[in-house]
Image (cartoon, rainbow, N blue to C red; front, side):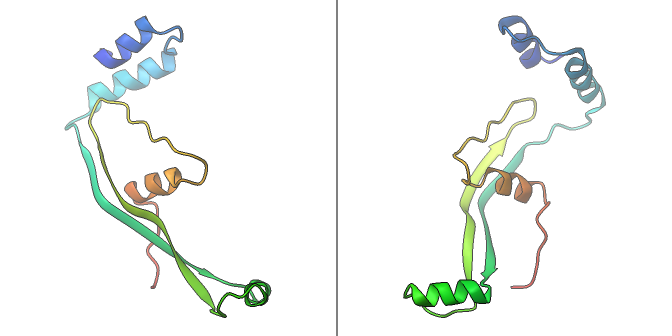
Length: 114
């Protein structure tokens, strides 16, 4: 059985779902035990950028303080949710942090010291 969402997409769209996609949806619907709602609140992630000697010289010549590193916040209190059986679109400009957000939600970001 194919979900209502995928049926509507298949019938109402100029682009039909491939058989492989239909099979994947059917497999997931058949084998899914419990639907899961993914929720994240005030998700934050920052990294430490250590300057090379060349960068430190350039920064000093440009009038910046001579520091060995700076911390950069990549995710700033991001919140959201994804409902089971629904498509979630994550949109943003290049460099906005879409991949970082997905990596943080899926626990693919390693936790280091600091």
